[in-house]
Image (cartoon, rainbow, N blue to C red):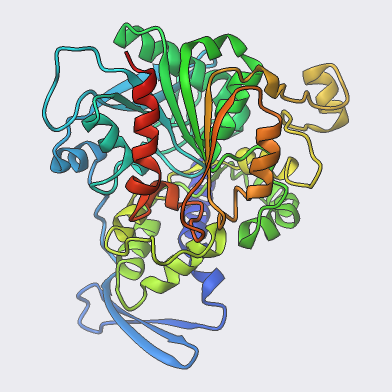
Length: 436
């Protein structure tokens, strides 16, 4: 009985992941399926979008999986190592390391740099095009470590809990635990392996949130960070725009109730159904606009910087799963004027966990390591107003950079065509000033 229930939960979760984005865009579309009478497992998806007929021949039974990220990097000319890091509270994180660039290992020690992805992403986010930041740093002489937050595709393990059998226990975390447990374990591991005393840190979106939690709650780790770069920092998301911003507050209470009712704790994991949608809709030139516009509706519109050739590859590796509690925690700090604070369990829950009626506020004055901040004017998630307020609360901001493209959006920091000249070259230049 439990096995059947688990299968139902998984099917619901995967199907919701696969169709949620499509349904959001195709409000007035008509989708139907005509299965070939010959039984050759072929299907024709027929879309009617604003009276325009579009037909696509696809294979509904394609069970292929994305190319393993190690093979993907090898094809790009880079060697990748796998490292498993166990946190203090028992999560096993799979990190990827690029120890050197295409030219091979060098005798001199290479400064380590840790790159941390955002919500629903993974280490692969830094590696999907030939001018990705992970490759650029490796070629520039850095020892590149690519983090994977607990619960994503690569870090779905625990010494005690099974994510599919012990859902309530395994998925009971937000980005607080990532900053408080994951980053300290990762930093200690990296420094131990490399023999260095400090490292560089780069975070994007939730990767910046995690870093600020680390600095606020475990300030001793600031002595282990040479310098940090935060791209599109999310700390006070008061002015989030677009589909995400307008719906998070109103939908989160309902989704919270629904997920608890159905026992769904994981959101948008990588699944065959999502991959099918990516390959047969998002990779199709005639339908690609559906997927790109859905992404733009969340992050901000910037068609000029989105490489549509690379876009299908990006979607093959995304989304990579997360705990619903991560989203719920963001919703708690979303209302204008809210503090950057730990998870709110309600009066009784807070009293039991924290010894007070309200959750503790993160002390950002503890974030002492040199900090460099990059933001975009057209970023609908990390709004410039929120970024400026964050800057005003931090004690050691060395530089605040507005990307020299007024259309630059939230995902452009990862995959923009001109990211190298607009951001990455400057980051490498900054790090080189610190590196011995």
